[in-house]
Length: 408
Image (cartoon, rainbow, N blue to C red; front, top):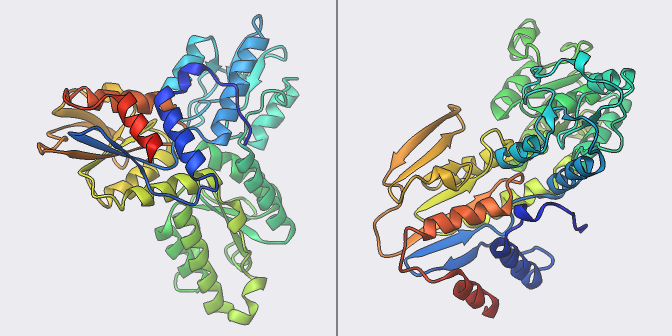
């Protein structure tokens, strides 16, 4: 795996050491069980995989290189580099300006962007329409295109599906930057439809099987299908791809479900003519983080702390998994830990923050699950861990616990 040159303040000596130990003990990544950090009065169950993935580190390296290489140029990002406030705030402090917000709303007019400006494409990628606009302005984006290679792999699969006359079903959030970009590429060669979850997949199945009148299709999926999408003909032959930060298990479940729908409609002997196998579009990092969360949830913990940006799709899905098992608190950083009794945390369903009291149980040993999203720096996780430790004055020191971990 490539080593990226990213600012040292995103790295953590503590978390880095833990990851190094796990990698040495499990180089093939077959063990998804958590790392147990026993500090005495508090125990942490740290996910086997968490934090910056390949695509994020690649994007950060390129962004800071752009700053270093262009001291006399104006530098712009199409939107947030990744969904993490610490990273985005640091880039803005260094002079980078965001052209749009995460929903695609304009912050800086396109008229203000000129050929000599540096424009960075974020890790989510961007639409063909925006690429064409920049090209017309004479702005070159090739050098500072940070699009995640796993996102471009999904685009290539969409292109293949289109050439094979499949309609592309995109499992994603229609207003997410990555999904907007994927949809832009997909609809170039294929009728395309965005569905958010299994509930929408079930509705889609009812249209496919004739259980719903096709006259209601446009109203239900308004704004989520391409101009050439015709529900009378476009649902005969389909393939499912995804926004890479969605729950991989849900994408696979949707694909399996729609395959059974095709079996029901056309017969098992004809399924291959109507349903493409698209398992190769799932992101390895998303899979690893989610598998590691399943491994975490086998622990008998009192609560879970999930760290990451509040608009991070992959982080919200980790929260979703944890919430099914135990009290879970979604925090951006250690500042949300207001005290040993109060925590400010994010409700990703309602898109609001709330304060909970008594989040740390009063017991002899408190067991805490700790993980983070793929766009969260390890230093932020370390800061959360240290903040919790500060509430337990009798806890062992970090060096002692790390030394014990190396002996295992």
